[in-house]
Length: 220
Image (cartoon, rainbow, N blue to C red; front, top):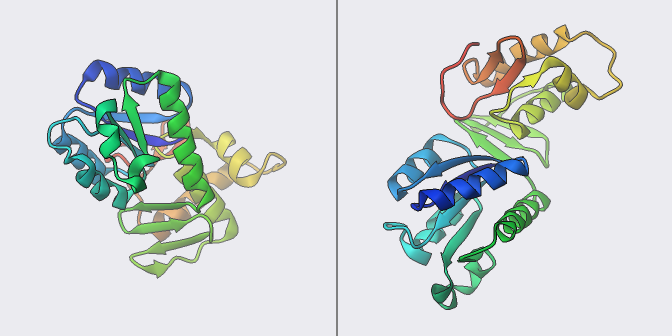
């Protein structure tokens, strides 16, 4: 599951992309102007941006390089412009019009390539290196126990989703764990304190917890 930003000014197309990407397990935000897309990208941690190069203000292929510096981007552009695409960006271009399964396939291919090259997550002053199982806060290593790290990684990979205590035990502790769900609460409190994420690691009433990277207020 990935969090994807769709920067597309044709709302019907954007909505169709969002609906179909949601069906295969992804979460999507939509922006119909470049300014809105930049603001959303500033506030949230996206795994992938779908950027329509024909959108006014997108900056074309030169602008795409700026987006590429931050995270993976899939460039949507008219087929007539594809010949002008720089070689280094060509593998990230999807000519319009496209079939929805072409889009889903391109998204999955990019996400798989990113995952195979090592995974990193950055949020506020927190950096999580999932390949090295290392966590930094403000550039300094945070001492987490192996279980605390496993819980944090579970929250990061499922960010913005509400996970029950039982589900967190299954993923972060393992299906064979026989302990009480109360241990989840204890480890959540430790993560909040060590990482300074008291507001972002939210308690979801009658469900469990979620790591909120979208900036909405919620109960803690």
